[in-house]
Structures are given as structure tokens and as C-alpha cells.
Amino acid sequence: MAMNAIASLVYNCAASLVSIIQVCLSSSFFIRFKKTDGRKEIFILGNGPSLQTNLARDIDFLKNQTVLCVNGFALSEAYPLLKPAYYLMADEAFWNYDELTEKTKKIVSEVTSSLVEKTTWDVMLFLPVKAKKYPHFITGILSNQHIRIQYFNTTPVKGFTQLCHFLLRHNLGIPSAQNVIIPGLMIAINLGYEKVYLLGADHSWHENYFIDDENRVCLKDVHFYEPAPRFTPLLYKGRPVKLYEQFESLARVFRIYHFIQTYARSQNVVIYNASEKSYIDAFERISMEKVKENFSVHLT
Image (cartoon, rainbow, N blue to C red):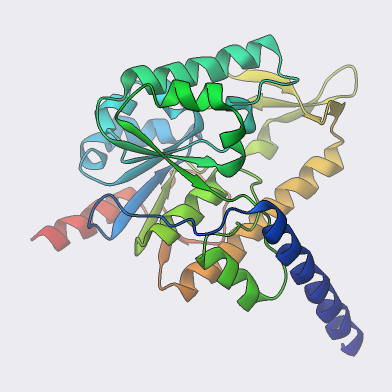
């Protein structure tokens, strides 16, 4: 027990020191988020297949809510109907085309074009600070005067809890950028919303892994807005990913959600997972039927 405590102390000391150094070297200081409305609730829409159910059944309700959508949502017919107040792009592929396949380039180009062409209302677009280095992308986005860009730091934060919470609270970093929902949650919390509802956060990738004839780990990639799944070999920096590496990566994602839950509680924020299907076990589960019932009671 004593050895475990010592090991934990050493790890936290080292991780905290690394976090401080990385923040000093990589983060932009004095970033502040500002809400675009006076509401207490926000809905974060992930792009998991289960979101299709919500868009078919709950779209009239969601039209009247504050919505943050992510990555490829602009490709969907629901985008101009919901008129989200916030949009988040976290995948570097949107602005950095290096080493992308022609197929992927086409997809990210279509997303950017859809965002610029379809947006006829005011939207705050959240982008990592590193996107500033790609002026062609930024200029294209800002050709639509309805889109305002808010940058955020993606510097990874680890170490002692109090230090991490201080850095997170001042927008100097995030727990990790393993997937787009993680910065989405951090942004929603730091914007000042008191209740955060997750939809379309299936996180069921492990159901869609398979090994092809060349022993490559592949993913049947499914999004609600695409008519058919994409079958993609998984790569990291150009090399094939091993299956154990992929599951280790998933473990980090689910562990981070528990860390975010701790941070949310420290900020008096409640995160509800209202996804029709989800493997996330960190946040309180709630049905959309109950969500709508609660809003009806609040309005009366």
C-alpha cells in the first residue's frame, strides 16, 4: 500500500511538471469562452448512429435548445433545421491535408463546404489553437460572416487533481483530445452551462473492429449522416495500429470521461448521457422522454 502511494505521488509530480512545461510552451494564454445565450442547458450531439433516432423523433424539441454539434454534422439535413449555436471541429484533418487519402480529403472538404454554404445564422466555431497555422482554411471559413471562430487549447493536462482543475478552468488545456466529445464537454462546462446533455455518443467502435486478410486492424466506421459505413484500416503516423494499442486507446477515452465527471462536479455542472445507445459509464443516464418531461415541467 505504501509503495502504491509513493508510486502515485511520483507519477503525479512528474505528470504535473510535464503539464506545466507543455502549457508554458504550447498553450495560448487568456483564452476566455463566452456564452451566446442565457440558458442553463446545452445539448452536445455526437455523430454516432443512434443520433438518427433523436433526429427523427426529437428534432422539434432540439430546435428550441442550445446545441453544440461536432465534426461532420454540417453534412446532415438536420444542420440547417437545428441551427446549432456552437460547432466544434477537433480533427486536424479538416485543416491539415498532409498524408490524407484522396477519399478522406474529399470528405473533409465536403464538410467545410457544407458548413460555409449552409450556415445562415450566427455560429461560434471552436477550433484548436493549432488551426491558426493554416490561414487558407481559416480564410475559407471566415468567408461566411455568420461564423465566428473561438480557439481553444488542446495541451494535454495530467497530474495532481487541483492543478489539473486550475489549468482546465482557465482553458489552458484539456484532459486529452482522444475524440471530439472530450473537448466538447470541456467547452460546454467552461462556457458556464449547468446541465450538459449528450446525444449520439455511442462509443461502440469495438463492435466494428475486424482483422482483414493482411492482418490489419480495420474499422467499419459508421456515422448517422452517412448512407453507408466506411471500411478503414487503422493507422497511426502512417503505420498500422495493433489491436492491443487500439483497445489501450479506448481505455484512455473511457478513463478520461470519469476525470471529466470529477471536474464537472467541482464546477457544479451535471452531465447527463441521453444517448439512445452508449458505452460511456461515467455520466448519469437519462432518457430523452424524461428530458422532455423535465423541460415541460420547467416551462409550466
